[in-house]
Image 1 (cartoon, rainbow, N blue to C red):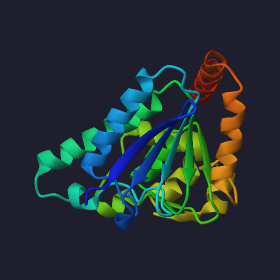
Image 2 (tube, rainbow, N blue to C red; image 1 turned 135 degrees about the horizontal axis):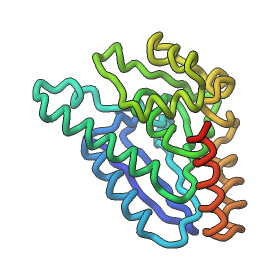
Image 3 (cartoon, rainbow, N blue to C red; image 1 turned 135 degrees about the vertical axis):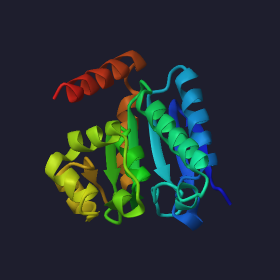
Image 4 (cartoon, rainbow, N blue to C red; image 1 turned 45 degrees about the horizontal axis):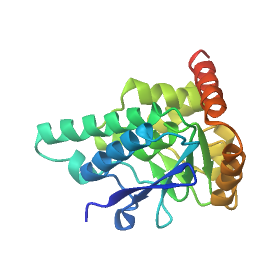
Length: 217
């Protein structure tokens, strides 16, 4: 199975669910393509107050599909990487606040997806790793910039150069996630309840102000 990326729009919230539990939600090319379609639909849907990105089966995402990334066809690998980068960029550019609800492994491209979100909330079972160099891969500068903005250059180096694996407490201490909660779905739900009581215009304006301030740091 190549897995799926599902979109549900419920009470003005767009719920994006990554589902490929047998591969810990590693992203196939088809899943990236579906994510890109869903993000386009979200952008065209009026009244969305928030986007929640989550995984199924106790995993957020183990990252890219290594079988596709290690293909002997360089054109296939290039097309896969371009598709992944395009999907992450499109997610980043959505106007509504984006919340990553993280459980279990969040590796490689999974971290890229999480960093495309404005708020990251994880469970105590979450763990994080970016093993790109070990697989002969590198990341686009835009991803590295987001990582450095979140955790600082030194900790970013520990992940990228050292291949360190962080547990939920370490990720929260370094700033890779904003909150570690016993029940991340409930913590996300509290934010959504608050957002549903505000106007879309005010929400988007606030999100844009935060993003502008982050980029100028």
